[in-house]
Image (tube, rainbow, N blue to C red):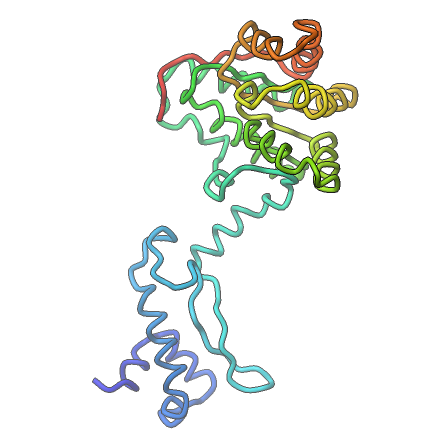
Length: 281
């Protein structure tokens, strides 16, 4: 079978030729472009989704069209990519985030599908009730029980409602703050985002590098403003209250009095929910 016949076998290309009343001579004159299009379409045959995409640019395929200037080459989104773009429309409402593309696809409504853990279901119910409450949640429990995953669903929930959201992996954030000590503009912008976002989730608090500087100059000013302004705030932690208090107090010359400044604001911003159970990882 000739190249021209192979090209004309593709339904999309055949419709393009029919609509513009183009014959085999047009194909021959633009054989490189037409073969490129045919090969791109061939890669999409039988595709099961973006995870299986064989295109050089994931979710996009080469295509031809006519403009005022003549034949034009471009890359258009496939149906799978268009659906993902629709599902990720809420990402624009995140102001500062350590979430990945897959994290933005977590749907709070479907998190309990197939879940049989009584402890998880009870914690989930409390988190869902908090969505319409004044305070957030301090979700604590051992590593791997699903705390971060659950609150990523919460972050997406609020972002889809048009709320401005920050999802902060506290150890990563503190490291970024330390690395940017001389970048005053970055730190001021970052502090403003975390002070004034409608919803902030502090993930893995207590696992960060702890020093008087991080607590008094970074964490405390943000929590203080959020408490005064009654801003919705959530936390996850591997530490329960006595453990978190001990960790913070250990690095403070002032001892527990200084640590309590932080803990009082966390208490004012959130209700404690303990998520027990075995690791889901």
